[in-house]
Amino acid sequence: MKTRPHLLIGLLTLLTAGACERAPKRLTAEFYAMGGIPVHVTAYQADRGDFLEAVESFREKVQALEAQLSVYRDNSLLSRAARGEAVELTPEALAVINDALRFSQETGGGFDPTVGPLVSLWKQAEKRGAPPGKDELLEALNLTGINRVHLEKQNNRTVLSLDPGTRLDLGGIAKGYFADLGTRMLMSAGVRRGLVELGGDLVAFDRSEDPAPFQIGVRHPRDQHKLLGKLKLQGGGVVTSGDYQRYVEIAGKRYSHIIDPRTGMPAGELCAVTLTADTGARADALATAVVVLGPEEGLKLVERLPGVEALLVIELPAGGLRVLKSSGVGDRFDPADGVHLPFDLGKPR
Ligand code: AMP
Ligand code: MG
Image (cartoon, rainbow, N blue to C red; front, side, top):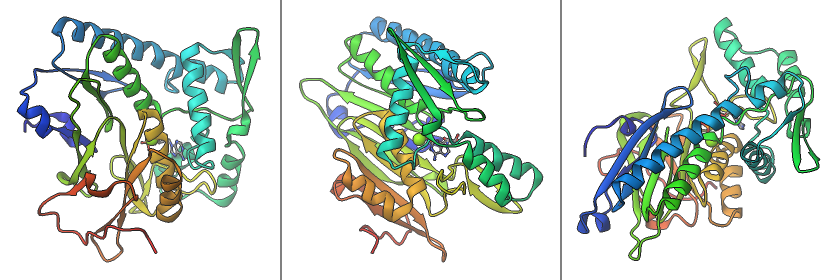
């Protein structure tokens, strides 16, 4: 396998046995989005011209959506809404926001796109070297919650407004959403089998006459050069969320960048969650939510949702990892050889 940048992130695709036998023509392309995240697009047995055209349209679409949705751009719809403006949404922006609100409800608020004030508070805490105080936490918690987000239909238009101090940040689902968008565009261009991977979030599809599964490498959350194992995927989204790519460090202690919107505290128990769902956006939101909810509640949520499976990784206090898998994973997860872990596959009891 070649060493490529995307090997260093949570998920990576490995050649599938089926595809190897058929010796597929494999086309790949790469561009950058969301301030430097590499986007990898792959298609098998596709026309090169159609593929490159689809990738170019995809890149343009991502750029256009970023201009509308990025919280890092002063003129984006979300930045203007955060400044108190009522903004008219484009159909695409409305679709992502509706998804985010739906996933927030589906996860009992574990996923919450209004968590921004809490994320900022923990970033400030890192700079000053001390965790936030109770009053600061309460203040930020009061600005959080999807009941502070208002969508109003006016004729054919939808207008977004936010209560004062509230921000809408789609960082927890944007990568998955963009990966969905890319695969839809590949399919429209006639590609039968392909995948799009964006910063560890991956969406794959195989609409060929003889579909073969994809094998996804799941990275070891504590050693980026190792695999935790391989996961077989028929298609759809697979996303890893965890504490190892991004975190804040305060007085020598590492805190997750994922915040529990119910308490304002960084999520603690799970060091990684790899989750599969029908779409990338859903897998992205649910993976973040399962990290927030922790092993027991998180696994219960996964078991309750049809078509959703997950691997939950806990770092044991004595060292080593404990991997829990949801009931539908079965032998689709193949733990890596030579991974010295107390591999304890089962439900928490
Ligand atoms: P992900 O990497 O998809 O798990 O998303 C994490 C990013 O989403 C963080 O960097 C935060 O900006 C934001 N975030 C943190 N906690 C939450 C949460 N509970 N719900 C939604 N987004 C969150
Ligand atoms: Mg996510």
